[in-house]
Amino acid sequence: DADVTQTPRNRITKTGKRIMLECSQTKGHDRMYWYRQDPGLGLRLIYYSFDVKDINKGEISDGYSVSRQAQAKFSLSLESAIPNQTALYFCATSDSGRGGTEAFFGQGTRLTVV
Amino acid sequence: ELKVEQNPLFLSMQEGKNYTIYCNYSTTSDRLYWYRQDPGKSLESLFVLLSNGAVKQEGRLMASLDTKARLSTLHITAAVHDLSATYFCAVDIYSGGGADGLTFGKGTHLIIQP
Image (cartoon, rainbow over all chains, first blue to last red; front, side, top):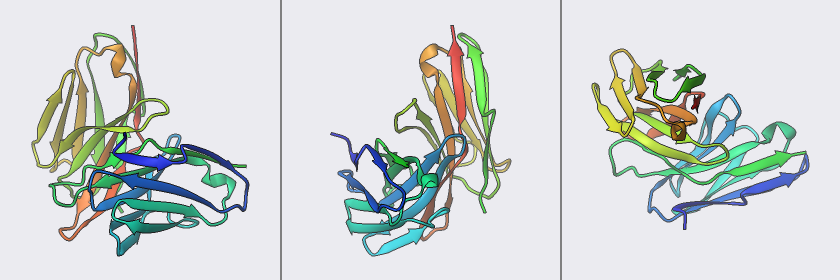
């Protein structure tokens, strides 16, 4: 089983719909992140959380919200999906107890908004 | 605002040749990471560089970090087809009390031809 699991892996949704992407981890890491990948743009940080009570906006948080339900679970919501939110979304974790913030990534969720 | 620039963004090379991918960043940091991504897959951590002058090698890949020049390089020696992938560098601004997640370059799409 993967250490960082994202569900669903693929999703097609209509404009205006609410959608939630879920992430769970078994690595025991305290930090969790949501990134978005678009062709030619690399990965951009949407939100990050250092623990259950600490949620922070990243570079491109507009149109997104998150919830850290437990140390192991971090979900990303699109309240009203729009076509330019079509992208590949990655959840990642890291451990604050180690030097550096090497991130470990889930398998990704490919989201298409039509 | 931290900016991370990779070059080249696209590289086609022949097996057996050597080449270097460059990663420049705009703000002082001594934490840099290299990742590999195969098409449709997640990101795999390759190297973690945490100090000036750090050099790490794995097989035909070698990464180095010069924090004074704000430059990291990923050198490929005697390339083989299996190294075809997209390579990302990512920089972490560690503020002591926490980090803001990783800022990624746009990636170098590497194709190695027989």
